[in-house]
Image (cartoon, rainbow, N blue to C red):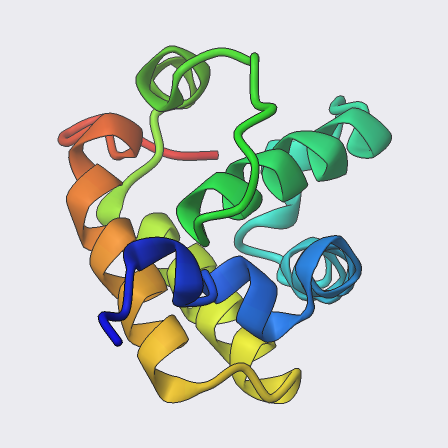
Length: 130
């Protein structure tokens, strides 16, 4: 018997699907909004919509259904002037969230790799952050 790609569960399915992604988004934003270095980015943001966007994006990253129709990463983040240090903090909060929720190491490694791949779309070198 040959194992096909369809028979291998996605990271999304392995961690518990939509409910697990929603839990991760809730824990993640709890951490980020409590971080004085990052909270200012979200002062005038519709957090219900923000949480929905992140859940949809994280679903795609983890191999779940692609229902994201929002702006691209660069379009959404470049105007914010996000420095490397703040990007690293956000990534650390996301990985700490995944650890707290018991997400397997290989899934975390995948998320870490994606964070590395999209860094240039989010970080604005040489411009001050919040």
